[in-house]
Length: 249
Image: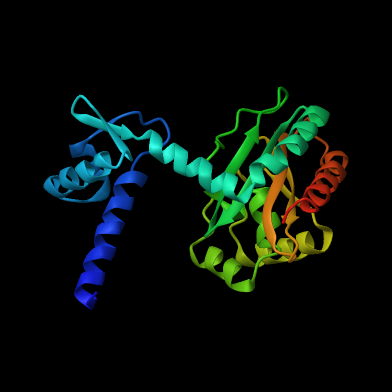
């Protein structure tokens, strides 16, 4: 394949990805015009690419509009289950939720964001914006900071270079302050987030390590700041993370 062909293939792949990722939480169906607007493509190009995606089952047509196809769900489930992380973690997450009655998260770090692989809602916890498959800025979450504290330096530099966007009332937006906090998290194995992701929310997280010592994921407990005592739930989170880490390949 010549250089021009490689460039064209890369452009096509980028445009296909742009259409699939144009769907946002709450979107059921989208029309061609809206997808063209969100992706910045000419309507004719969007229409052609949508046709290719529909042929492969990645999009489904619905009276002149399209929705994400079921094949995407199958691929996503396969990607998660190939790693076995969700299945391995679920019993531990369930025990943690039962013990604390708060919401428990399992997340991985991808670029400058965390991606939530599993969430178990607690009856005493606030209504959080997190969702399975959803993303959130890593610097504004306890799970994100737990993983950043054990990541190579270039990973943190990428996060800082992207800008420490304010998400909640107390989001860390100063690089120096974030660095100091991550050093403490690295030493203690526990990350805290107090109203950094949202008003009134407290999170406590700890990383999961694989056999090589890499921080593969993190788990957290999320609850109300005025109800959850961080020093009481932190040992449970840390113990669960260490126990679960021993089961990871």
